[in-house]
Amino acid sequence: DTAVSQTPKYLVTQMGNDKSIKCEQNLGHDTMYWYKQDSKKFLKIMFSYNNKELIINETVPNRFSPKSPDKAHLNLHINSLELGDSAVYFCASRGTGNTIYFGEGSWLTVV
Amino acid sequence: EDQVTQSPEALRLQEGESSSLNCSYTVSGLRGLFWYRQDPGKGPEFLFTLYSAGEEKEKERLKATLTKKESFLHITAPKPEDSATYLCAVQPSSGSARQLTFGSGTQLTVLP
Image 1 (cartoon, one colour):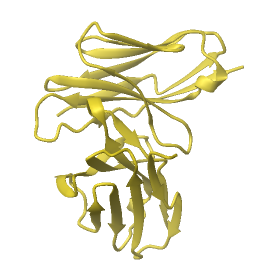
Image 2 (cartoon, chains in turn brown, blue; image 1 turned 90 degrees about the vertical axis):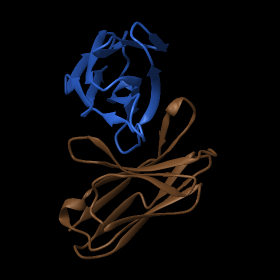
Image 3 (tube, one colour; image 1 turned 120 degrees about the vertical axis):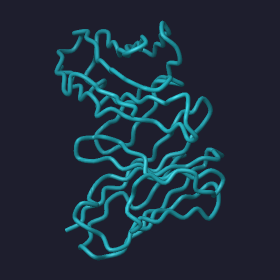
Image 4 (cartoon, chains in turn orange, purple; image 1 turned 60 degrees about the horizontal axis):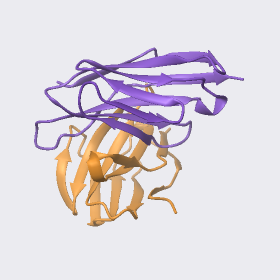
């Protein structure tokens, strides 16, 4: 049983398109995140939601819009994709002891 | 601003050759230091949390230690299945959100 699952795992799309990545966690956690991992492996937080409410919004272009229909789901919608958006996007949730549990990642390639 | 620097960037070991990975950090008060393992094509997998200087945690061939400025991940008699990227992250004790700041990782390769 996957704890944090996200789809799709791979996404290749053209510049200017709009795409979404879906995430679900079955751990019962209240807080969920979106992280971006660049080519140098740095993981940077993009958004954090607690019980469907946005609590962190780092300096991310407003083309990125998270949506949390309930506390088990946090989706990421990206408008007008650019080449620089190519990266791996990880969904995560926070458990006891502030431990973060990550999904398997979504590899986005913009061509 | 919180910073995490990991060294070396890459490390190749022979099976059974013990070594250590370093994580140096600056943070405005440390709430916790986390170690993760990341396999290619996968998300980071939680290994340890350390909360105060002098603390140690062990799991199989891995032992994590913490001082006021750095953490070490010691790998004893590694096996090829220990090959992965090891990520370190710090969580500050202050700030409204206390989100993690990650280092760029050490890519460990253990040769049979």
